[in-house]
Amino acid sequence: MFGFSLTAIYLTILIVIGSCTILYFVFADLADGIAEGIPFFDPAVILSFISITAASGYLLERFTSLTSIVAFVIALVIAAIFTALLYFFLLVPLRSAEVSLVYTDASLEGQTGRVIVPIPLDGFGEIVIESVNGIISKRAASYQGDEIPYDTKVLIIEVKEGTAFVTSYDKGFANA
Image (cartoon, rainbow, N blue to C red; front, side, top):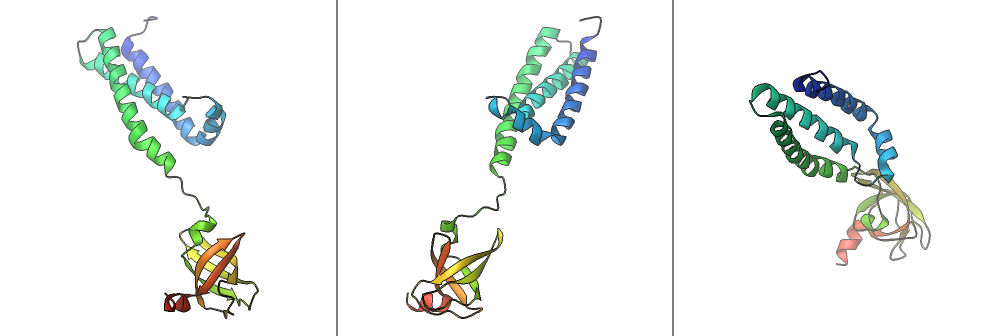
């Protein structure tokens, strides 16, 4: 084809697509941002499909006596299978496992914290909550209207409008 052997064409495509894959890894966020509006366009899947097709085609041309068309069709089938496996068992789980430091007010309910600014009667203080997201400080008020001193362990009963309503941790279990 075009004066070149098919093995040379497959190998050239493999080298070019391999280089594009390395560039994609470096500029993945930019490429994903550009391609965000195009449905069914995932550069990682497309690059892997082309590189697996080229590698399979090269190996089939080089080491088997199959005709070029049959070798190309088999290479496409192999690439489709491996790309599907790569997509469903590697790319989808990795994309859904993004780590986020975001928390919701509802996720704080039921957690414990420490008072760092004493909570007066019918007033506000401040607590810190240690979680997997790090240390979170929140404005706090007493759930039962009691005064809660500094360094008391508290239980968050509910969070409304950014304020954690807490009760003393020991007191919370004494009434239960």
